[in-house]
Length: 168
Image: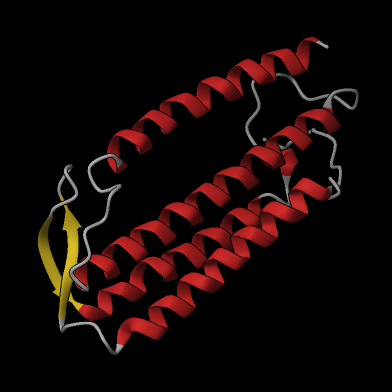
């Protein structure tokens, strides 16, 4: 089935530029941190944590490169997908009249989700390395409830805002 939606180029505004720059900076800092501390890590590091944030599985220290690698791949993939808002999924019929505001909203959501993913992966990488160094991390036991709560709250907020956006 061919997509009949209008193809519009959605320009970056200040918020978009800031969030992209912060995401890229986080990726860069995450990689610098991993490279900097890698040689000082013990040969095994925690690779899995239970819901209380306690390590319950261990792997070779090279595992610390996996999450930053996934983060870069995911960031690049979502960045590319964001270039084609006419292919995104919408709850309304996209017409020439409502395309720009829906595309702007969709690209903004995807950009924020991309930032959140990069932030989570940076935190997880930091958590793994700090726990390998013997540091006690304060967010360990709250991490899962916060992620689950945010994962439920974000779609609800998006749904409500999109309904408001398309009533105008």
